[in-house]
Image 1 (cartoon, helix red, strand yellow):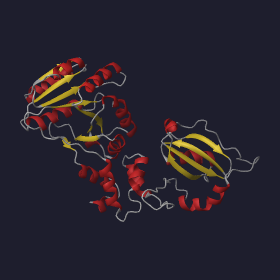
Image 2: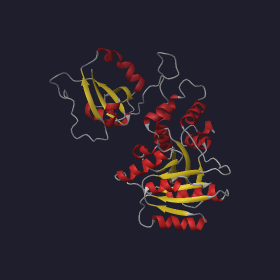
Image 3: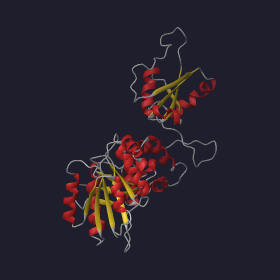
Image 4: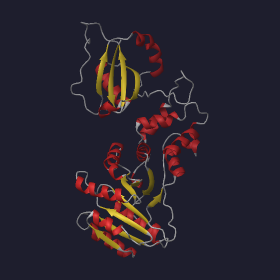
Length: 374
């Protein structure tokens, strides 16, 4: 027997490459999270075993990695035959079959030495609705050994997802909310919805500050919105100017800070905004992300804006996605609380304060547990 290890973002991708290189008899031996040093090559370290033909026979050389697509898998190493694996081959064949849908075993919460299989159907359903494989396995692990799997998974999701709604302002209280993110994510529209819903409609003094070097016409558009709402508006291009506008201010009420849509290459603007937020820890910073973005893109945005230390995630375009698994995966992996969902273009109607039980039920309804968890 011989073994070969791949780094990949999914077991299925590694399986496809392994069977292309080793033939249909390649068997999954182990799958686990990749070490930190190998993460650039893939999130998972997946090992396969196969019967190598005797030297000199056709097929004795396993094809190399030339021409392999980088999204498939990265080969780490090959090892000589292992007698222990040879003895375990019958059990491995019976346990994992040859379906190509193998997932790691889960041992949390069960007696030592017992390794029951994860619910493959549930893991597949979670992945199909936007969850990354590692997150899906952890969620499904909550059901291992549980008598009531739906309740166990509901508790697991509720514990992992943090929600931070909008707390009503007390009289004479001041609060500043900032909305940050790349261009075109719906920051300004979300700000206007919140201004109406939680400012004007609640009879709370509200003002809007346009901060940073916005694109052509952006400040004028926000000024028109402010005029329609009947609230004061101030445009400040420099971040030092924003600090001065807020420092020693006697304003009592809600201040909404519309930051410029930052290209990630604009480090000067990002550094200036980061310095402002470091000075003003009281500002509630909402990172605005489109709900239909890919998981990798969401994680990239969160990492690129980590310097400003966002305190909330705000997802727009929620009405344009089939399931919220990708957004939920971003919440879980980042540890950031989610505040609002933008559910359409109408101002101020299409804004939803995120409710944790409702969000968890929607996540379960997209999977096969919906009927039992309702």
